[in-house]
Length: 193
Image 1 (tube, helix red, strand yellow):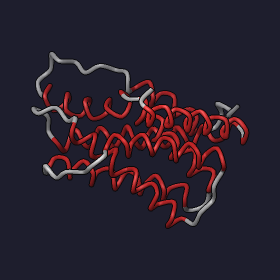
Image 2: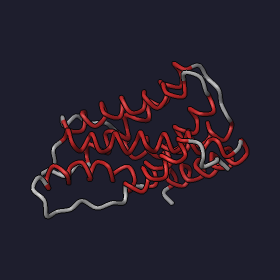
Image 3: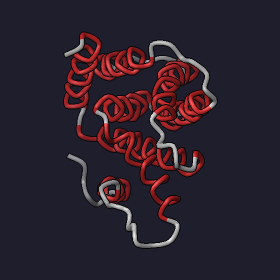
């Protein structure tokens, strides 16, 4: 179990708790705050997004080195591109299948501790991030600022990646078990359970 003396562990828990704070609607600028909060809460509202984003952090931590920051960065950057595609009205086929497949594949990568070069890890993360970002963009409320909404879902995603990286400290077998559970969830999603 990670020690609470480590600074990243002490920061992850309060950051995750902040996601549950509601916006105060009595203040001016509520629409701007609501846009940011909508984006911030969206990755947390679906198990598929939550599992995939934590799995990216776990897998990046297992790979180590440059992959520790490059794989999550590729996910976040391409996720923004996917959101922009949705906002532009461009079609991306099989979005839900791509998201479910990401949960399955990322879970398997964590469970098997699969090591690849950084470029391949970034490409895998980016391919799945396109689907997640597209879904975020499609589900943006109409009266919301796209920039604030995107800022919210980028912050939530990065925090989930960091949570996965921090959770990787609990031990190899626990993380591999988490990978199996994530992969099983992805398989269930693909099969429609």
